[in-house]
Amino acid sequence: MSEYIKSAIPQTGRKHKLLSQIIPLFPKNISKFYDIFTGSGDVFLNVNAQYYLANDKNTHLIRLHDVIERNGAEFYDEIKRQMKNFDLSKTNKDGYYKLRDAYNELPDDVLFYLLISHSFSNQMRFNKSNKFNLVFGGRTFNHTMQENYKKHVRKINKMNIEFSNKDFRNMDYDRLGKDDFAYIDPPYRISLAHYNENQGWTRKDEDDLLMLLDDLDSKGIRWAMSNVLEHKGKKNEVLSEFAKLYNVHYINSDYKNCNYQVKDRVSKTVEVLITNYRSGAQWRYQSIVNVAMFCPIVNIR
Image (tube, rainbow, N blue to C red; front, side, top):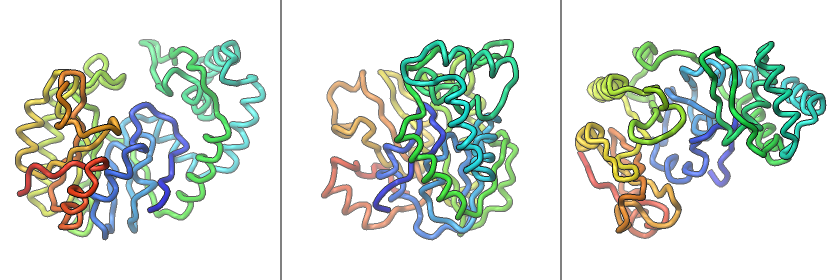
């Protein structure tokens, strides 16, 4: 794919910049594609499959995905109308806080979309009273985001897609067979991402996920998981041991040099794609001739 579509839904930690490394490692022929922690949707929008299931535990995200798929043009028009109504821009703090107050008084999908489009780092955060409480981020729903929105709508309208709002443990994996593929991008245990605040992703969550992946592997179902083995001197020992059983592809997340080649490991993040299938000779050749983009596989089953 010459150009990867960027999802209309802004979210911190999105995968768009890494798609050129991740997507080529996916299987070529996919019947059903399960995006188990779909987030912004950057990944499923750029995968070729016959059927898609996009799941996320975050109800707000799934609602946005669903309304964009079902009612994209009308939703866009309402976004533009409300931008004018609140006089939103990358410099108007007052307009943002009026928007936030309006949403907290009467939650609405359009207002929520505009909140995360203008909030700090495009994050979503609620206080104990379930009120959106992020500060203004000095950003706006600009021309680039508007074009991304239109591309998102055009692409998703051609897809056979279903949205799911479940914990990953409660999904129906019996629907998956050997021609299908699951992508997993869970919260990272050792990072300081906002979704992991207040034990949002626990050791039990991680253990349950790894057991699920082992089970899928035993049934011959292909999967790939994005994750982090090391971050600022911390190492995910459980994940590192798990990865030894599978294939590990190192991702160049800083666009400079592959993490395992950098001397200053303490300040670096070792991001990986773990797969339970071989990616073929083409991947090994590419890893040799283009190390600026990829790093070689270190474990082959």
